[in-house]
Structure formats: structure tokens, C-alpha cells
Image (cartoon, rainbow, N blue to C red; front, side, top):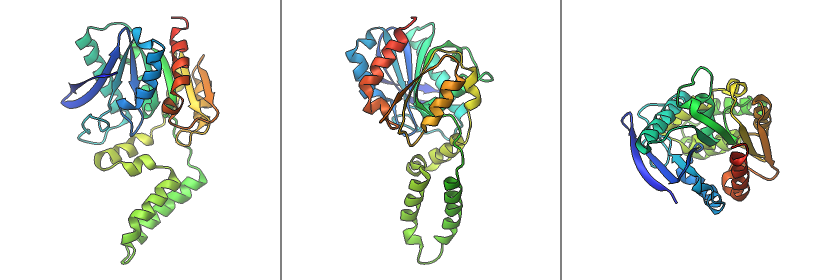
Amino acid sequence: MFKKSFLEINGQKVAVAICGKGKPFLMLHGWGGSKESWEPLMEKLNALGFWNENLGIAVDFPGFGESAEPLTAWSVGDYAHFTEDVIRAIYKEMNLSGDYNLMVHSFGGRVALKMLAPDFATNISEKVDKLILVAAAGVKARRTLRIKVASAAARLGKKVMQLPGLRAGAPLAQKILYKVLKTHDYEKSSGVMRETFLKVIDEDLSESLSHIKNPTLIIWGKRDSYVPFSDALLMEKKILGSKLIAIPGGRHGIHKTHAEDLAKWIKEFLTDSK
């Protein structure tokens, strides 16, 4: 369904995929995902004739999918500037104009909130029309007692595991600890991307929420263990006029597991008051 190609953005090799025609519809994936993460949802949207009126644009963030890793650890702001540069390049290459709709999942939400922050606004971020937040990250996690204890155990455990005879068990111990901390994304990362993860995960973007004036649809799984449903409630409260759709049995990957439902809601949302 996608037509894949590569762009060079500030010397960075970037993979993009495009389908359909009409108003640009930008899709930003989550941490550990890629442009292919959207395929189940795109297929369901296709069945509804969505791509007859919308130009789908999916981007692989640097360090994911087919895009090269950044040379140094990036911040959320770096990813936001990168995204805007990609949009400018695509608009120029395809001779596009006007607004675009934006859909994000998980980490893509951090990038969107940064782009829409009042102190970040540029001519390309101001072109965002409607916003769709699917289990979007951006609210800094509260450090619960469990997290504090586990973090202390991590610091102590690192020293203990350096003792003779215990080093062999270090990898297994780390995996158990990552599971307790629910930091699977950190565990799967390495090198510059692990440093990037630590850099972006700690930024609280919740202050941006009340400044968002775009029509916004929030879709969330109530059983999401990565980005809690409480974040969805906060976003609904802070983003004036936003609409929240909760999926009772949904987890973090609802764009895949509930693709048919999402496709219907997305089309209705973008069609209303067009």
C-alpha cells in the first residue's frame, strides 16, 4: 500500500512511505515502532475509502525502521525539528500546500506535543489542523514507591553484580529488573538510542496540553500498561474541546489490535465539520 522512498534531511538518511491522495495525513510512530506499525490501521482505512481523499505520510524516526540512527543522543526537541524538516521537504517535493492532519502513537505523542508547544511554534507546526492522539506519551510518569525501590535496587545491584562469581547472572538479573520497572524500551535499545531514550523519557510535556487549540481526538486502551489511562483523562481535561474514546480491554497497541474501530472513529472525526 505504501510507496517507500528515502529523503536526506540535514545529512540524515530518512525512510518515508506515502499512499493515497488529497489532504496530507502525517503519522508518527511510537518508540520501537516504524512506519510499518501503521499498516493494520491503514488497511482498515483503505477499506473505508479513506485514501481517496487523504495523502498518508508515514515517517521512520531516526534510529527506527529504515532510518539511520542519529550520531548523538537526541532530545524530543531534536525529533520535533527533524519532523518539521521532513514535512517541509515532502511539501516541496510534492508541491503541497495548506494544512495537514496529524496522528501519533506513544513516543510520537511527545514529538507532537513539542511541536505544538507555544515556545516552539513554527510555520510548519502551525499548519497542523486536526490532531489524533493514540495512547500518546508526553506526561512525565509519577515516581511511585515501587519505582523508587526498584531504582535503588538497580544502583545497588550493579555494584553487587560486579563481585566475582556473580557477573554471569547479571544479564538475567537486568531483565528481571527491567520487567519490574516496565522499561522494556530501554532494555531493547543500545548505544546512542539508549542514551536518547533516557534523554526523552524524562521530559514532561504536559504544560503544552492547555495550549493546544486544534480539534483533538484521544483514543486509549484502559488496560494500557505503558502509558496509563490516567494520562488520557489528563489530556482530555487540559485540551479544550477534545474528545476521548476509551477501549475497555485495549492495551498499548490499539492501533493494531483495534484497527477496524480506530479506522471508523478516525474517518468520522476528520469528516465532521470538514
